[in-house]
Image (spheres, rainbow, N blue to C red):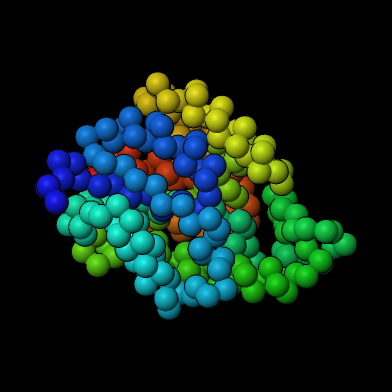
Amino acid sequence: MAARTKKVILFIIEGPTDEVALSPVLKKIFQSEDVHFHVVHGDMTSDQSVSGTNAVKTVHEHIEMERKRYGFEKKDIIKVIHLVDTDGAFIPANKVIRSAVESIQYFDDRIESAVPYAIVNRNTRKSQVLYRLYSTSTIGTIPYRVYYFSRNLEHVLHNNSANLTDNEKFDYADAFADKYNSNPEEFKTFISSCDFAVPGEFKDTWNFIMQGANSLHRYSNFHLLFHKDEQGIN
């Protein structure tokens, strides 16, 4: 196999709409690299098989999946960027309220569910997984960073916190891609907006989202990816 002319940046994302929305502009921003998106098709950090103990191993398995799929070597990967939703994972347990609702409902100060104990258990597990991942700077020898969207991608990118259908998510993603595909600098300005971009260094942004009800509010630290001094990741 011929030597690769470009190094790989691997984005690990939850769903296909994340790729639709972000892939065009990120490939423009990192055009000197070979940008790949690995879609988990679900929330790895909420999966019942994933814990704080095996979270790094699970991410490594997903890296290996993508590496083998496209035939590049570990040495070809210059960094792995993992994008996650917070889903209110860090709120106190007493802010998960029993309610006669058909599906989980998110608010700025609480979560309502017909089975609150299940949500509390999910939050406990998810918060442990996220803590382990944000504390990890390399997986194997590959630089690694996990960035969050709170509560989720649509909440941050479109200021919409409703329970959207898949079709609505794709419509939003297409519109976002169309807007920023040819305007990467405008995208950087948007993602760094003081409306939702958490100030501070990487660790500071994670400490912030873990406090109180912050993981239910519209916040993100994804802008740090574009800071050249972001703890050596760039």
